[in-house]
Amino acid sequence: EPNYIHDVAYELSEVVGEPFYTADNLIDATNNTDIFADISSGLKVTALVLIKMANDFRLMASGPRCGIGELKLPARQPGSSIMPGKVNPVIAEVLNQVCYQVIGNDLTITLAVENGQFELNVMEPVLAYNLFNNLCYLKNGVNTFVDKLLVDLEVDREQCEYWLNRSVGIVTALLPHLGYETASALAKEAYTSGRAIRDIILEKGLLTEEEINHILSPKEMTRPGIAGANLLKNKGN
Image 1 (spheres, rainbow, N blue to C red):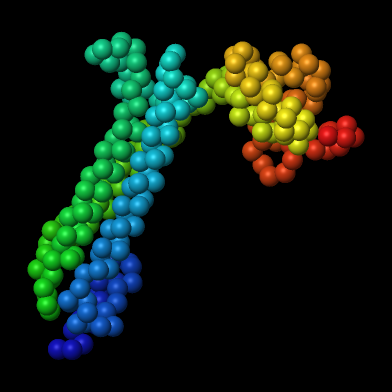
Image 2 (image 1 turned 120 degrees about the horizontal axis):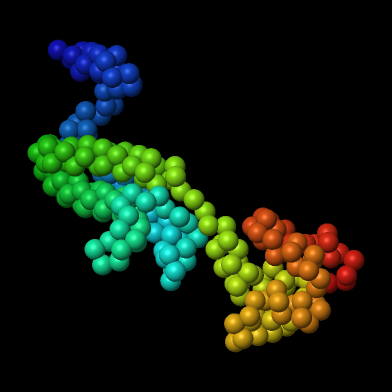
């Protein structure tokens, strides 16, 4: 019965609570499964972004003494067979491994899509199996990452301030106020001496402590505009 497929779509919509429609071109929908490759590609891209995010958390939490140490991950698996007391970034690693599986499954889906012949694609079982798995893997992986890591994540403010003050890159914020040559010389001296740029500026009397605090404040350096412009507009810089 021609109306059967339309009735099925309607009944599925009622049962599932999501809209289902019959394809406009049934021949194309039977011959080709490219739409599933498109969906799988979106899931793969999502996995790539999540891997990058998880690795950022791992790097920022590296330490506790010889790493970046800006973040404190919740101790979900404290201790190590080779380093007692170490807190491993296991939840970030879980998300990474989930995403690796999703990327691998995407290749299976890609091969299944391109292996249809003429009026039928007989590879749909492996395609559907891996596509459904990827949806479940990403959902569970992200939920685990949020519940087991993000919710109890802490920031080590002292360590962040230490790296900020020791950074040579912050000299960029000083360019509008001290000029390129002076800022470049400050960066070189800070790099070779191992001293903080802030200390060198105060020693040379180039800026007051109030001016430095304003220009080099994280708030000023992370929003558009010239840091400290209002404060220094009368100094002729």
